[in-house]
Structure formats: C-alpha cells, structure tokens
Length: 70
Image 1 (tube, helix red, strand yellow):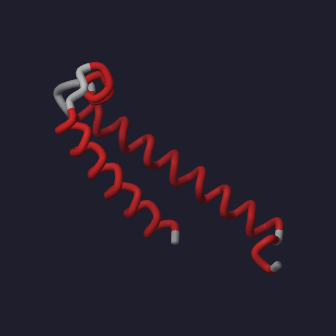
Image 2 (spheres, rainbow, N blue to C red):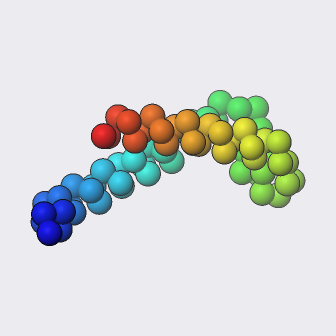
C-alpha cells in the first residue's frame, strides 16, 4: 500500500490540477489567436472538421503537459 501514502496522493492531485489548468489556459490562448470563437463554431454551428482539429490540438497539449509533469 505504498501508493496510498497521503503525500503521494496529494502530489498526484496537485499535478492533475496543474495539468488541467495549463490545458485550459492553452485552450483559451489558442481560442484568442484564431479569428473566430472556437466554442461557438464547434458547439452551436456543429463544425465537425474544426472539432477534429481542436481535438487533435487538445491531445497534443495534453501529451506535452503529461510529459512535462512526469
């Protein structure tokens, strides 16, 4: 039960929160750099091609954040 030590669990939660915050900030920056509102295009206008591009960017950012935290 070495993985259940409080400091290990706290560090894991902290790194997870930092990773989510970095991902969210990078999404906001990418949204500001594009000439249109990504959320509106994907959710309201159902732009599937843009959704796939944003999904690929999201996966790339998540892999970079995971590698940096690891």
